Image (tube, rainbow, N blue to C red; front, side, top):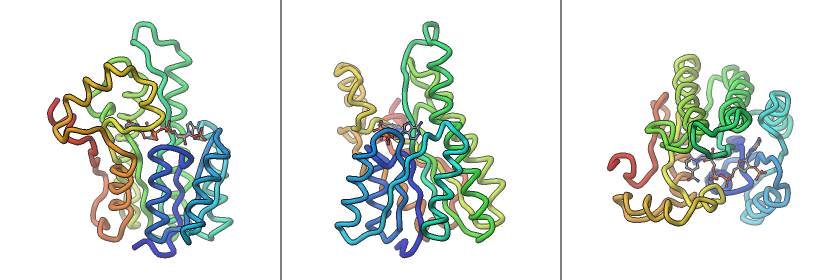
Length: 248
Ligand code: NAP
């Protein structure tokens, strides 16, 4: 489906990003697996893709830094000659109640979740505009749509990412570059593993589909938005939450 396409997946070393990298590779894309601290995990993803007959390379970049985001996109161009798909997936949480939130916890999450996506999007848009095609998928969150108590920083960053998605979709559409967001609900990854069991059970009780999400659930939504069949979809937010926020 994606034969020959070159995809950059940020935060590809773990969780949702790993599933996205593997899914795009299975569909024929050549994948650059972006990571920050977990070199071994990223190499494991690359080795798995290669063993299955796919093509992937890992590239380290701290996306809070513009130059490293530029270098990540540059690495894809240097290695494969083009960039067709960018999945802005890297992100982190630093939860805390609003009145106790430290300035650093606010800005750290904004930098990792929003600045990094902006830097990558801007860098990838240049070659995509030149080639008059491209797919950008930003991994937001239902927190950016409904707001989560204890996640003012994260909710603001993800709401910002949705605004960025729509502004970029409006600017880049004339050259057939689509920009969409996927907003996952609760997905079982390292990010949610640290949340207290009582919160997990409470969320589970509110999911109409009766289970928590898996990284593959999100990866399938990303695959669709990156695929030829989604050519006329831009500026949208695809919610992948088992009905959680619909019910809320
Ligand atoms: P995760 O398992 O914690 O993985 C986070 C990924 O982001 C890792 O690959 C990490 O790289 C990378 N990363 C973090 N900070 C970075 C930085 N400064 N520069 C570059 N990469 C960085 O998270 P996840 O649950 O898979 O979440 C992936 C995305 O989905 C995030 O944007 C998250 O906000 C969003 N999301 C998750 C859920 C959920 O329930 N899990 C729900 C809604 C949205 P290293 O491993 O190399 O450090």
